[in-house]
Image 1 (spheres, rainbow, N blue to C red):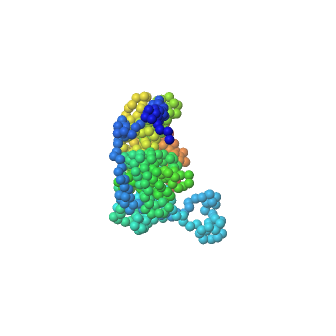
Image 2: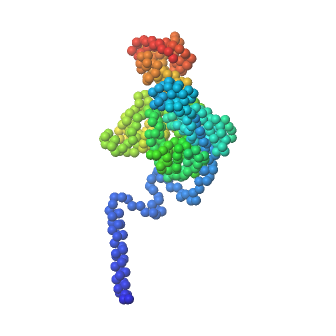
Image 3: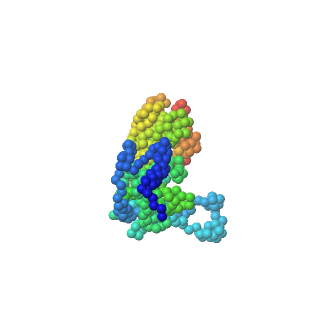
Length: 494
């Protein structure tokens, strides 16, 4: 074999060095000429000039056993039974079922027995005396609800109240000293944080899965209601049928959400699941327990996400925030001086970049609460204090009885001012400030009508109106006057 002398070896070494260094130099040129910023794994690169980023210590020996053990006994299995309320078949035949009448007994179409439909889900014990939170869709229309604890003990449950707008419901079982879960703070969770989903998928009791928070304030338009509040925590923890109503917890074992939905083309887990933030859960369960229904606050706005397309259409600068597309007359925002075209960038010192984020903040408030809004108005930053109202544009605490009367009449009311009474020459009255479908509209009552008497009994304020209607049965006669001085009488049955 031919031997290489020292001089040849040096030449070969230089040649190889140049050859191997060339692609590295070329790649570096491509990178440095690109507008994309380069990042390096150095200690300095981990110090971000961003107030929103707060470095955390890396997870070492991450262990989920503590959180699982703390949570698993407070998550229950829920079994429901209900009769199918309606179908195409029922809509066609109504109460007359020729197949049932022909075959006799509890028979339906084609002789099939109309057995109760059974479904299962999950729930979370939130107090030692047996209050349980779950999804509204788990127990909606159920004729019978049974709760089974992790120790296999079963109880019949009663529905205390439900809120379809957030898909939450509160149940009660008769027991004491139950293992209950501790509420965390869903505002403090961060994208990338580890979480556990605990529930009963496919009727498999006490199943624990792990994942991370993938996103916050997700609106997936799943509830299908105009008044729906969707600001879900998105995770990649495996959630399947039967997990609905179960717990989403942090590594401390604190409840941060109630699992409610999955994103899937098949109905089974396909990578993403969604949970209702615990701060909304806390507000809803507290209101149901105290008032029998949720005392929902309204800011009185219609808003849109601030996109480049919207900014171009409105000929404004695109900034992070939500665009006020409409202000409700006499609403909370209108009272605070917020106008169409304003851009809300913060609410309660929290950045707001989507309608879902704003709705989540408002969903934790009650009528009468004051929230601080930071907004851009005519290109200048300003602040406003907004005193939130209820859906009837006042600050009253709504009770089931009062709201059922409002729904029956199909109208909202306010007390008239002393000046208005003097101008019209009346001593008392309650004005109709909005009117929808209901008894009043059906019988010709129009917005602005002032009710002065019901069955010859003076109506001095809204509370008296509710109390009078509450105790009436059968026909009633309403007397009153319109702002133009025209007097009117309306009679109808309740």
